[in-house]
Amino acid sequence: MAEQTKMGNPAVVGLAGFGLTTLILQIHNLGLCGLGPIVALGLMFGGAAQLIAGYQEFKCGNNFGYSAFVSYGAFWIALCLILLMNYFGIYKSSGTDIGWFLVVWTLYTAIMWVAALKIHGAMSSTFTLLLLGFILLDLAHFGYPQMTEPAAYVLILCALNAWYMMAHVIFMDVFGWDVLPVGRPWMEFIKELPEKLDMASRQPADVDLGARHL
Image (cartoon, rainbow, N blue to C red):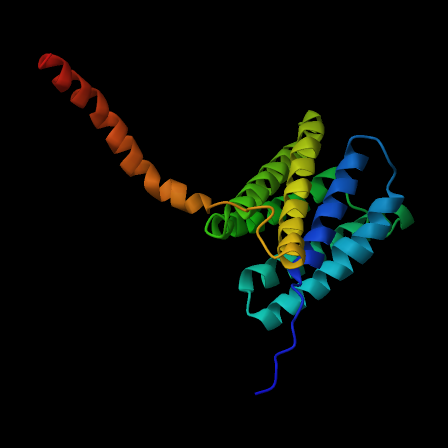
């Protein structure tokens, strides 16, 4: 039987592109750099590279990765096109227009967040931070501009979470053991919560019962 050729994991590229472009956009939102790097990286790394990673996830049979990388790759390309069209005065988008653009992506992210809770802890935290960041950006575009800075810090953490997952996969392959554990899915903790609360509610009664026998 012929040996199977080892295949790379497309998530290492998708997560790298997602994390890096998210990080550079938040650096811009904090007023530390201009739009040039965002447009360039958004089109090439966050956009094209993520799209390619997503199509590779399709071949792996991973629907979550397929949807996430292709969708957020398209997000970055669309955002860069909006910025370029605004610059050249073609179909200019107002702050409210971009706000609605972000709202529909918030709804998509909420769906992916539910699925992420079932995968592992790092994925759960990444999508929780992403969803929170989108909500804060929505508010920033609908009358609460002061939310832009908190959103930037939340999304910086989100980007670093994505890179943590990327490093987890790469280090596992290079070193042969789980250098950076990703943790249990948050869904498991949610399922265990009623039982733990029930046990906690019974504990004082058990203590009182024991005290009566002293």
